[in-house]
Length: 382
Image 1 (cartoon, rainbow, N blue to C red):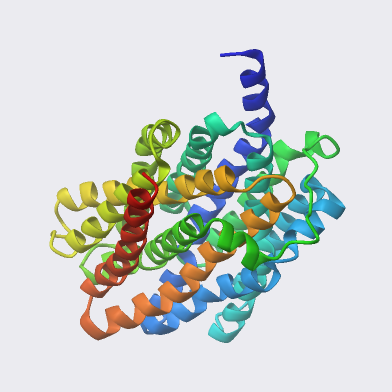
Image 2 (tube, one colour):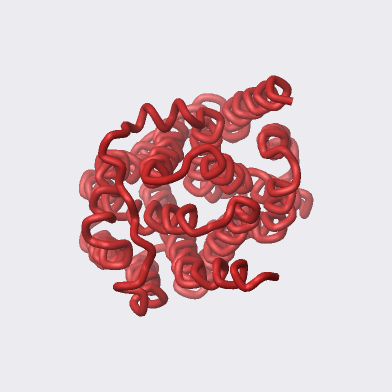
């Protein structure tokens, strides 16, 4: 490995560590509200609407992230956001009102997208093109590792009551620790005032579609996979472990898929990941929830569906550079969140209407659309 390559990887170490902490906190947080509402007897549509409030909050503020990151600096902006987010998580313990929880989730989304979006801009700014796929794969692996450990934390602190929320608030502060030494030396984020979000979406439509499809699949899985498990007769704690299995598949598969994205056409890699994910989510309802086979299906689905995101990011960085990359990364993240905003209520309504298989069929439709578009783009530009 050359000196330049080593330096490039070293410049990413603090953001990699922060991303692992983001994943850990998210892995603890994501199942808490859906499981608490399910225990209180709310229907799945209501659970989906409350969970989707995070996406509404993020979408309402995301367009300001590049400008504020350029003005305040990447590290101060991230740290301010995680402190605010931690305080909001503590507030969940003060009430059981579903209306208040909706508002808290909305506000948490407004600040929760900051460390995620700014970290991705940081990576795309410093990475070399020939390593972009593998860098994004390492990023996805570290987030997945944190996500996988999150449900294991819930095995210790439980999934109900104030303790898991307080634990989640404390874990959120871990994001700040690896970034503090880089308060003044983090890469400067440029903000292109003369470009719009529609412009960057048009420049990289397939990458943006990948972000949308991945966001829909992942956020639906994290909101409803534990609920699906409970409905299939699996204990809630075991349902949370299904999420660990989902993200362990990511940890295992991201590096080989990232390597493929650096050595083969990224559109073909994207098509393979999305179409295989569509098949696996349909298979989920055909496999017994008490069998070991269901864990294999969930692990493969997790590994392949998670890969849609870093492959999409690599496609994005391949197409867009300069000051527009901050806006493009933000648009990509907004479409990821929009996928969850649309997907959660759709999946909840489908599960209420046709039962547990509604989860898989809802996801299969969107994975298939993204896969077919990737195939068309690949064949058109061969």
